[in-house]
Length: 208
Image (cartoon, rainbow, N blue to C red):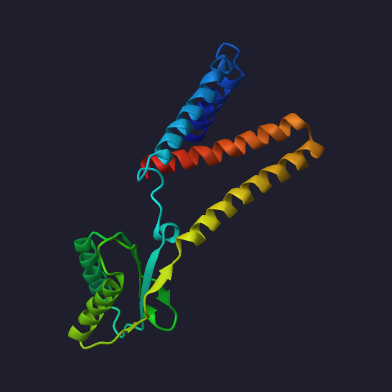
C-alpha cells in the first residue's frame, strides 16, 4: 500500500510536466532571469575588495610549519589549541590541520599568513616554542620542521590553469556534440556547464 501511494504521488507530480494547462514553458524567462541575477550579484561580491572569495592560504600565500613525530598523540590537540590561541591573539589568519602519517601517527600542519608590523620569522619561532612547550611539559618529544614560504604567485598560475582547463573542456565538448549531434545541442551543453560553474562560484563568493 505504501509503495502504491508513493507511485501515485510520483506519477501525479511528473504528469504536470505533460499537462498543457501547467504551461511550464510560459515561465521560461524566470529560469533565465533567476540564475543571471544570482551570477551578477556574485560578480559584484567578487569585485568588492576583501569581500569576494574567502581564499585559503594556498592562494593568498604565507608560511607553513609542520610538527611530526609526536611521541604522544595526546599532545596533538593540546599543542593545536596553544598555537590557535597564539595566532588569534596576534590577529593572524591561519589554517591548522592534523594529518596522519602511517609511521609517526598524528602531526600538525600550520599555515599562517604574513601580517604587517610583525616579524614573521619571530612568529614562526614562537609557534615552535608553543608546540615544544606542550610536549616538554608532558615529558614527550616532537620534531618541528623549519618554516617554509607559500608563494602567492603560484596561486595565480593555478587559477589561470583552472580557467584554461575549463575553456578547453567546453570547446572539446562543443566540437564533439557538433559532429555527434548538431550545433545547437553543443551550444546548449556549453551554456548548461557554464551555468553550473558560474552559479557555484557566485554562491561561494556570496556566502564566503
